[in-house]
Length: 194
Image (cartoon, rainbow, N blue to C red; front, side):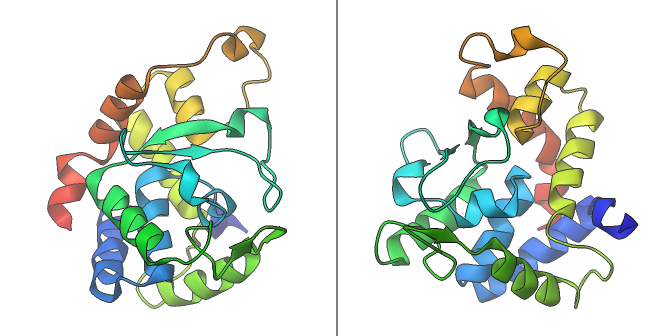
């Protein structure tokens, strides 16, 4: 579906984040995390409490028994802007057990499809013809708009870099450098709309 590939605009992202902050429940905290990370839905709903790095204000996307990753490059650390960090921290504190979003993930399964259906239905009341996946496309456009180097953009999004084997060498870009581009991408323009 073509609409699945259209990115949310900054105004639409800000609207969904504002509406999510008003409700501030488990589902809307997922929306906030998606809005400011561009991560895949399963990557967010499958987060364990140990994947939230409180010290570095970041999340670690890693495979576990309840959730596989799409590809090798999907394993990564994503810096969090304050709004996303606060939402994930609050949710982690509120959730019982090891998983940040226990309504959708447990030891053996991550039910991203259920989260997708619920969140898409809610979000379409505000922004028709889009899905939660559109946050990933928005991230790509936001990074392009601030001239983020391709290698950093691919690392932030967990996109495959199959043509350049050297991209898999080393430990990747420093978290602080990735944070600078996330801050620029979602910077003052978007944050001022919220």
